[in-house]
Image (cartoon, rainbow, N blue to C red; front, side):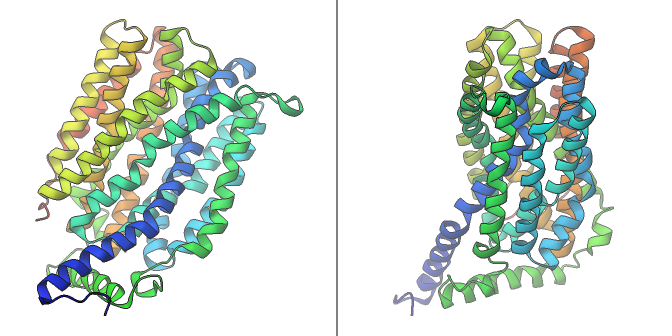
Length: 434
């Protein structure tokens, strides 16, 4: 036996804890890295834009539209991507997705016109659409409900960490001028390559289900498979709705809007914060890339603490709403007054932290009241529809900045979306985990 203890209850508790640790050590670092690669390929255009807009003559509206059109393409395959992971194979689906999007991301560095910019960003959204909902669904294969908030928090800290990682790398790449190509082009080309490598590794490294995990001890494999099967049986006994009906469920539709508000803030800040900081501090492109890391770094502990506390208390809705209200208030603060660079960094840290700290508890909600297939389809719908906020945030900030001559109007619009998302999540009628 793996565990030898006198009391059966103690054996079970120790086995559960050992299994959780084993799964987390094996999967989480790799899944975290995959999401870092994915997220960098979404937001690195914000760093590239520090040089690209001037070289190609793009206005703020053009840059905002091109940055945001990624999410129009992203909407198309979100639901199929999550269901494929649930019904077919996470390993094969993720590997295929990364291979294709890595090639597209790298090719974006070769654009010359706004039409090419729009086209490549749209295609990148299509190719990457299945990744995130697939990963959230994949986590439900390995973590029981009471552990999912913390698991999602660990996974989604990749959002702020990708900013931290991308900032110094982008600062260095913006300096190069190889083969007659500008630094922003090399930034996009070279930062697309890791996705291709990760796709090949995923094919061999990932395991679809605990029952197939030869890297788990037999007792661990049996315990985790049994726990997940019991969860499925409880949901079936409770009459959980089928996947096709889940797409019209009021709670699911409310969560779509909650996620829409969050992505408005995440990508509005992620893609425009470099330009805002550059303007506030009168910084060079390289200096701006370094300063952009500070708000993202401050968001990491906030995200982990919020996910841990949500799991510990079993409460999800207020753990989603309160960070959103704080993020909206900080963005309104930037829009209200003229701030210097230190004040802007503090407010952007609160804003970015507030936006991302809500994600762990938010993504623990769907699997708490839906069966496996219904949860997968709903996660895909929430991700697809909600990510339209990734178009709304960047485009609104860019369009209003051209019209008004400042970023204030766009910041107000995104702050309003964040506030409404906090209000709407409180309207969701689900039971908390205990």
